[in-house]
Length: 154
Image (tube, rainbow, N blue to C red):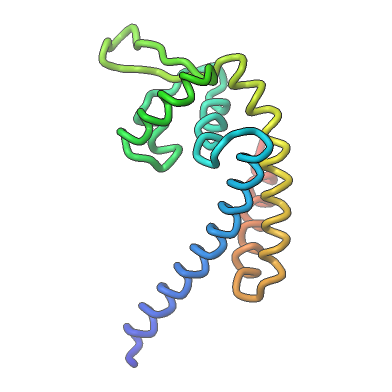
């Protein structure tokens, strides 16, 4: 195997390791959020993204990027969350084709109760992953990134 082949193998192994960590975390979050709050991980992600807008609305395409969904999948998800009374859509005053999305009171309430579950399960899943030799370096990198972000915060 040549140097180029080795690099491809290393990247592939890195990707598989990252996917394994993601799968472990996603499965744990999905089970807990669904059981305790009736939310999927992607629904939680959407509510969380909307909560971070600091008083601003979020366009559907921005929401799609934040949730890593296609435009049509985002529309279906927003429809479901709107039917549950967790968010609302608002027509853009400047561009009648534009639609903004924001949390309702019920959406805020559910998110705030689900956030503690999310954070606890995430911490537990990372602690579990840290005990797996293949995943430990990624968990360590996440901890360093988190620490760096906290040190840069105003």
